[in-house]
Amino acid sequence: MLELPTGFLFGAATAAYQIEGAAGTDGRGPSIWDTFSHEPGRVLGGETGDVAVEHYHRFREDVALMAELGLQAYRFSISWSRVQPDGRGPLNQAGVDFYSRLVDELLAAGIEPWPTLYHWDLPQPLEDAGGWPERATAERFADYAGAITSVLGDRVGQWTTLNEPWCSAFLGYGSGVHAPGRQDPAAAVRAGHHLMLGHGMAANLIRSAGHKVGVTINLYDVVPASEREIDLEAARRIDGLQNRFFLDPVLLGSYPEDVIADLADVTDFSHVREGDLAVISTPLDILGVNYYTRHVVTGDPANGDDGHGGAGGEGSPWPGSEHVGFLKGELPLTAMGWEIHADGLTRVLERVAREYPSVPLYVTENGAAFPDEPDADGLVRDPDRIGYLDGHLRACRSAIDAGVPLKGYFCWSLFDNFEWSWGYSRRFGLVYVDYETQTRTPKSSAYWYSDLIRGRVAV
Ligand code: PNW
Image (cartoon, rainbow, N blue to C red; front, side, top):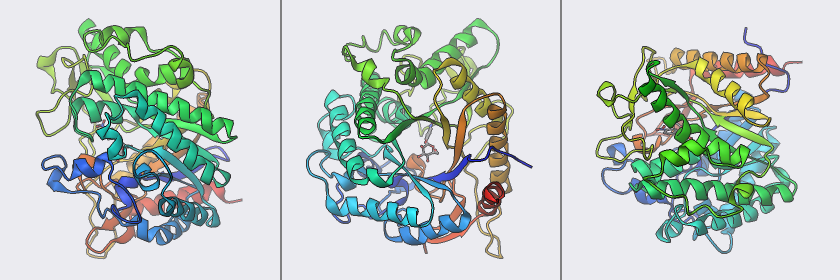
């Protein structure tokens, strides 16, 4: 029987563009994901988030389902374009009202709201002005953060600034497999900096208003393919760009020297101004860790695929390390082609606790896509997902036993939803969604998770 400490928080997570739909409703403006998903060839099957799982119109039913499952917290994101369509200026009251009603509904159901301010959906007017590679975008983000947190702050216990800045910067501006689909390594590095700067500016504002704040980073266990020098060096580089490029500025207030050196041919870091790193390293109340898989890497490119995982023709999401190859080990894969490696979660959590100043940690995303379909009896049986979640919760338990201050866990995702460049073809949900009828059917993993949570909270 899996045991986790009393008070350990169990939740599930979603993101605005992946579930809300209602893309043109109540004054919402376009974001970079609206633009990108409507461009031919960007998303598998030409799918978009225009309708998604219609959460915007079904949120009451969805909160009722969360309550039935016994979720203690719900991590969702706020669509910047819904509450501030131009990315600047006055808030759109109808958009604010939606999140206000959602928060009220959650609180009435006894579920803690955990909003994220930015899960990749930059208002298109800000991209038209240069996007995250421009410093002004960080200032716009802080303005938006200050405005929306002052409206909802009295009812929200925990704010998160960004979700996975690596994806926004390096998939959005480097490989181009995410919006806005640019392939410019120097712009990707600048975007990473301005995302973190925006985080720091927002975190300052949110904290000085008396609220709690954190940021969510996607971390990987980076494993060299062998003990050969060339592979160890590849692992150092990928760990640098994937993990330390974000952890070091946010938690230590400096960029890793080796990563700056690795990027010498890409950028001279002249976009970093004096004082930026002090802002970026504003003390945090929590750090969110998203964990899915490991990277096995080799410096001998003849040995591996390019690891860029897209439809081909794209740039690299690891600027300056284009020669590094990525291997699949011997481990089972999810429908994303990602290796299932629960021990890596323990390693990642222990590493953060060991190498960085102490901060309460939450796993803010962990989960897996599998090809789920209802049986003839209408049930959706997903034993592989139960195995995945059980293994990773045991990995959390191991980290806690080793002294890691891990305080909670959010499963990705509550629902099947719009899986970015994969459209609706990859199902991560605890709850199955029939995209024709919008019917929600909890999978067997949802009942399993529910029993686990109830087992913990029973007096
Ligand atoms: C995360 N990669 O995305 C996001 O936070 C979610 O919105 C998403 O649905 C979930 O994980 C599953 O993919 C990622 O290519 C997308 O390395 C792509 C990558 C990593 C994370």
